[in-house]
Image (cartoon, rainbow, N blue to C red; front, side, top):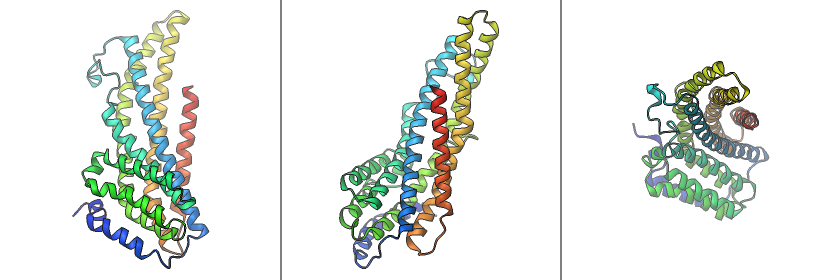
Length: 307
């Protein structure tokens, strides 16, 4: 069976989507208040999930470097085979790998921002910037790049700009509907990448945090037990705090990222339904908003703990 993304984003669809957009430009009913609310809510949540996820992953890498450094200071070179090269402070959070995930998260943020511009006021500069960044981030993700050629990736960004530039004021509904339907498979794929990588039960982010936390805890507790002065206990407790903060991220934040990405896939389908049918359920869209708020709340709490 062919990849659904390839079926949706093939060259025929590139032409037919723009043709359909032009053909339906006449006689299109405006967005209802409920539809505008659905699109606005989805776009806000998508942008928020993308921005929080990208920021948190970058923070996790910084914290991993700090934890590895602290473990080396407390215990010296480790014999734990899981820690491999002692010169690798980021421990699996190498830049090439996290850049791919951050690009996926940023693409979701770009999509949400572009959709918000389209449905709210059609500001051409903001829409153009979001579209260009969206296409650029897609091109930096191997899983997306391998499924779509350069022309297809460029079409995604061009479509956002086309619907914004020509029909945003008079035929906003058809423009938004065409955009949502044409990018649905891409958005689902981006969500799948986050679900895979942030899975708290075996995703690579979780595994990398775990393999750094455990040795640091062991070294910190041993150093604290051997300490006899305040000056000796202080770095041991600081190291232990680092490890437990990372554990909190691994057990609480990762599951919220995955929950938000799963909810976004459902909301993505619900949004298409909301734009195509006069009667629809908003439950999946509401659930996406709830999951997004939960992720934002956890991120805010962890930010205060880090300080």
